[in-house]
Length: 140
Image 1 (cartoon, rainbow, N blue to C red):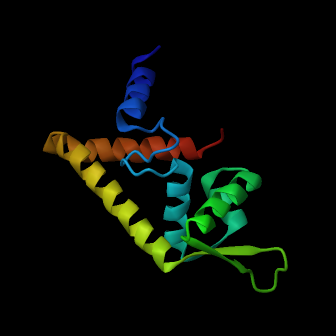
Image 2 (cartoon, one colour):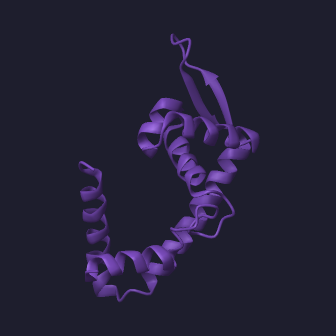
């Protein structure tokens, strides 16, 4: 196994990205639901099919995920105007508060992580993460 692969796998384990039932920031929430909350909060309103595209998940998976968020009282479903089958997702007040808590936990965890990197290396680490994310956006 090459150095890059070992480093990536070590980071995934140490940061907690391999735990599907808990966010890497320690919140007792499935990672997929946390990602959905980020997308819905950022969009304000988002079509369920667009959420599936952004999360790179099957529509049926996003339908179940959305049902869980509705069950938690964090998301409301609305009919999309002019589209009888379209569904818009919007955060409830409780969902907005939960999304803010998740954002705070994520920011705090990332800040603590970056604080452990020597100051002169931080911008290089951030650039490398951006480059890695852009490469992952490409064809799979």
